[in-house]
Length: 312
Length: 243
Image 1: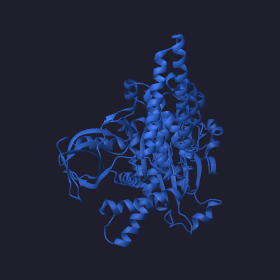
Image 2: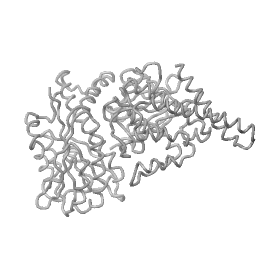
Image 3: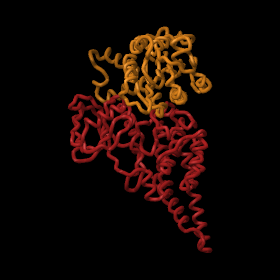
Image 4: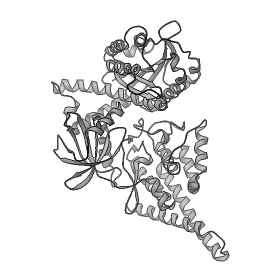
């Protein structure tokens, strides 16, 4: 059923076409396809000379549900969690198919994995804290991200910031998770329920950073929990955060602010370790300067971002 | 006030029926009784979506007022829960549409409303989907060709129970297999709020040669409203009551 939906989009909507809203009469010139999800496709479009992202689908129900989520995220005070919603409308194609579409701010950026691999692992701590800050705001206002995964995140410039590009799975706390992806779903790993609570997102949070180092994902095997722990242990770049990440995997944190607090402590400890190491190095000149520099950089960046975030 | 109950038959099969009445006809009958019939067609790796035996899948769901989906067994878990939830929304939306027509008159349906109003209505539909009670009767094809898929089906059903039990509303599940040893259909697992304990039952499922899908759907209809369920269904005409 869904596959046929995609085929329909592919054949009907092409670059150069103009989509005109039935209710608000705004015109959107389709430029190119940005991607396709479970519900509908996203296109880059042009509206009065500026770019925007247009999501379109013949499944009006699911689109309405997504728009409701975007609208409620906009009500979260003082922050921009999801993409900014510009327009919601319907369109009937020349062939007579009825579509529902919405237009949102076009976020241009880089995927999380490639960014970290290119710019260095000192960014891990930065993005972890950014993501926990945003999750905390979301949780505080009574929502859970749900379908938190690498594909739904993007690093935008400048300064580099992790933004949420697809928030379709956002679910009210206490309800059943609306949308999920097996690899990121604690239910799939046999490590918890599918009820929307902050700890559900924190599990997926760990999987996001694991996915950066296992882009092809991995099988759960006979003992899913053991598999997860082993895979986590094997990633050297995540060693500093291992203890915190394990607690998140096993549902030990009931709030994202608790997890953030412990993560900040981890980063502070590095700051101290770095200082002692620098002193030792001055005396002996035999320590590893690269490692010390790296740890220092990581801590500095992460703490800087943390302090910045406190201002807003 | 009492919350409504949604009744669904979830038919899981890998081929076409070859005994008894037309399954699309019995599915239509079930639909008239307020039971939605959803169908999952499991494809072999060499199958395409156009495979002949699997065309029946769509026809049964269409006349049963439900949702159908063809899948390879690898993605069974996600499909089973998606189909179940989609059918719930569909049922609730049908109900809301009927109400809307009574209020707005004529041929007004949700699609004719502007996006803002539609959004408000969908919020109500979502609330109902989260809080209503749900009864799912799993009707499992255990004919010979299904033998190597039963393990995956078992996992998918446990997963389904995990998804649905995260809702606020209550759930009840039962599993029947067809063909039965002597009858067209046989009880595997009695009505229960969870499916975690089915692991012990599944290995015992023996597979037969025939596929009496039509008669099995008819039999399944009568499994709703038995025992303690009787009371809750007696005054329940359309399968759904206003909350």
